[in-house]
Length: 103
Picture 1 (spheres, one colour):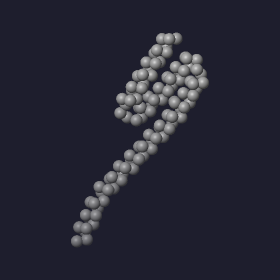
Picture 2 (cartoon, one colour):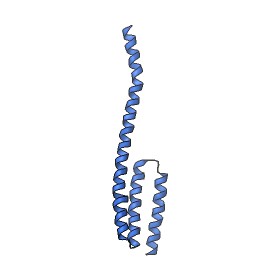
Picture 3 (cartoon, helix red, strand yellow):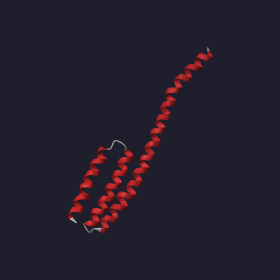
Picture 4 (cartoon, one colour):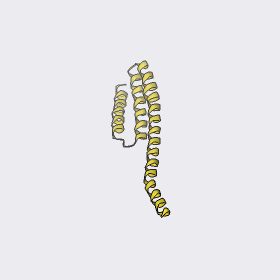
């Protein structure tokens, strides 16, 4: 029993390090979700089922869903920003062409 708890705690440390070292958001969210699931198992082994259920529901469930929604929103904002930058860079070229055609 103590060995299993030690292994799970080592996995928690590795997951925490992996999240902080991750350069991409999607893998970080997935690792965070696995961290919460491992923590839920630790709570079960420590005979705290109420904490285990809460950790699984809130940590791995609701929080992960909110992080995925935020990640989707960030990607939409990045796409909109790129499109608006392309329009800004294209606008002077169009106005110069219009001026040349008027002459």
